[in-house]
Image: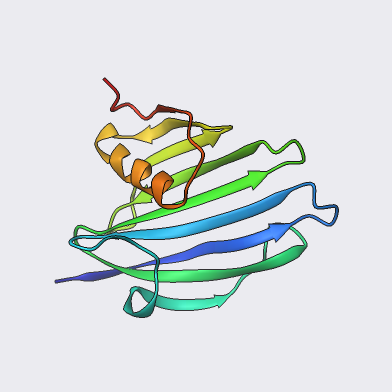
Length: 142
């Protein structure tokens, strides 16, 4: 079975000097048979130091290995001083192609790009990271 390496996902937790803005990102991998897992062990191909978005905090760049049928789900979020959260969730297949992108704005998940067939991955991601979702517009609602 072929293994593809997808690269340079920025995993960070940082805040501005005044602590008015907080940025965080997370990467989860959907493995066939295992479900959603955090990348560790044999999934990580390379890990190196990265530059965070804001001054205080830390970041790392991660390259991961994916097999046929696996998906990488990457979410990036920023919270401002009014406690409003904005961000996005990307779903990439084992070849590294963006198959679904959703925007998150104050509790609402909205589909931007992609086939609604992959919306279930975004829902699983939102549950796994305990994202506060009050409404979804991912295209698979009835």
